[in-house]
Image (cartoon, rainbow, N blue to C red; front, top):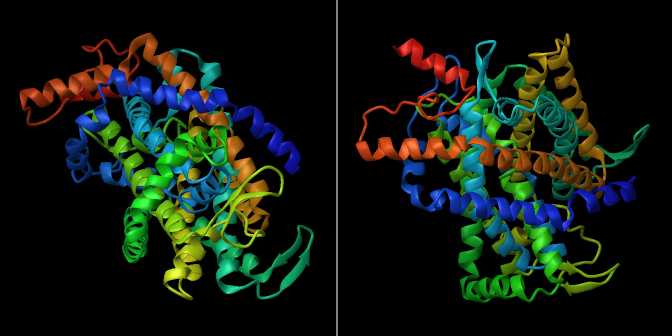
Length: 495
């Protein structure tokens, strides 16, 4: 099974996808005149403003739901894997994909807002909706929706829950084991899996508002606590910071693990972590109540910065500055070996060892706790995304009990992922991310060349900014944007 998963990943994550992610980000950055830089202050203003409604959540709640998807196991175990297999230079390529990816996040999230719909009293949207409405290809939209349901309902939750289980087992010990039909399972993982599934069921059966309310409290708290700990560790090793920074930059272009390994792992884990172009962010963006679609696009662009430039960088600096990593070479060899050879790079252990080297006895439980919040809220975001695509399919094909079935499936996948080996869980997660990225990036590029709706929205927003309007409005018909039915209806109701 592991060999088959590795074979599929080799096809999906070929250099073509690496360059597609980077190329699309560069292209959208140039076409939006680097909106991720020009509108930085506006992003911050929008983040702190906006209110929810009966149908939609606030911009901040949408950011929190989106961030809960972006900030997860990829920020701790994913960064460790990038360093472990690609060398310190992989961190530089994570930064590059984040900077350019912010423009991609703007494009896809603005599209999510423009083409959103109302279902059962809530806003729904995402790539399946804008592919059908802007590109006019329903088969392609269905392909994305089905792929996303499988990826976010089955494959990706296993990665997150597996990381939680591994971290808790490392922090508190296995506490014995039990022989089951699924193999020998430690009691630590069994209790963890049961607890996660019970809490997950309580929240997802409460609907999107409960998910938003939970994540808007947990996400900022967990991210801030994690960054504070990292700042303390970096501060205590501040004399090594210039050396570490130069190591990351120099290794990016003369990499110890090979140029292909550095850029490949940097982009792969960068996309996995910040999700720019993957097509997950637009689902949360579409659920927001905003005056203008470009506003939520800007907020989502800012979330890429928070994820990679803050949280991922915090992890990377902690690991490298304390030397808590190995760099794998060909086969079982090591290019750099600072810690025991049997410590898996795909696990949270690099980060746990890094924190433990400064806060003795605290590192493993602290990272286990941080990972619980990071990864659990990501599972919630995955459910929200899968549910959106179920609702998209239900517009055409009425499947009784489909949403209930999704809840059962994601809870089962979460339980199974917690008790499985890390390598196969991460491999299956990479397959899910890769397929979604291929479908979504090709889709938004085609839409851009067909009608440029997200760019038109940006120019319209900038025009109103210059005019100093008290309240922004969005008229898709006036801008030549077709099939933005909900926004057209909004304008009619105002008139």
